[in-house]
Image 1 (cartoon, rainbow, N blue to C red):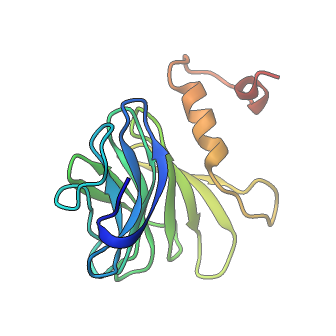
Image 2: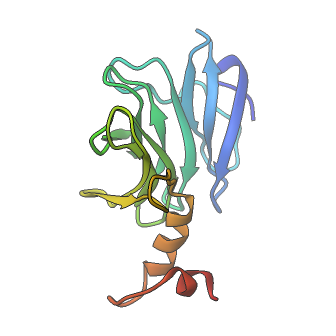
Length: 173
């Protein structure tokens, strides 16, 4: 797969078109997110993405069929989730806390991840639909929650009529 000019890269996801996302060290030894073109190695001239303002790193974790991807980047305000569409990196701010991480993205461009809700406190899963962010709460009182399972639920709900569904419906139980 190659690198952005440094000595290491990690691939985190691939879509059905062969687009790969992950992170790589560049020639300055900085960690940067990358998104390849379909079925080709990393091109240092075109595939690297920068950081949010004031950040020192960026990583990508998930890519959808449209080439949109999500991950996190350092910023002057702390670590932040983001969604990239084309060449635009949109910030997904925390819900009341000081960090957020984008973990997965579906074909509608909806991002799920984790966020702090206050400086010291539980981690909450979130869903970002491109305009609004939803706090998915905690799995149990006083416990942290993360959003990998939320992507499964988002995929399940994508083409369903409005209604009430349970995780048993999502899991086919």
